[in-house]
Amino acid sequence: MEAAVSYPPLNPVQLHLLKMFSFTKSEESLNELKSVLLDFYHKKLDEETDRLWEEGKLNDHVIDEMLNCHQRTPYK
Image 1 (cartoon, helix red, strand yellow):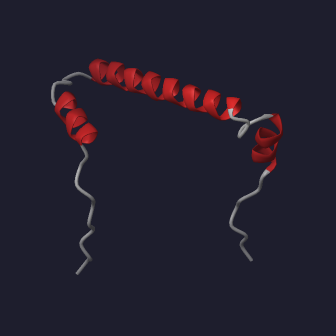
Image 2 (tube, helix red, strand yellow):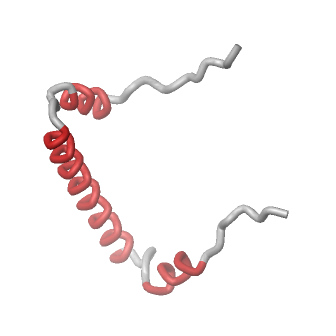
């Protein structure tokens, strides 16, 4: 017998999105909605990146370190 997986309850945003998705009947509408959500999160990411840059927590040196960082799990 498999163990039951427990998930936290849905938050208000998740519930609202589920309600919105119930009105999406076509693939085209779904793609449109996905695009709107992606634009929203892209804007939030830009705002957060700008804030970190202005606070000095993000700069060219930090970005270069991230690009050259190897965090892969070593396998023997």
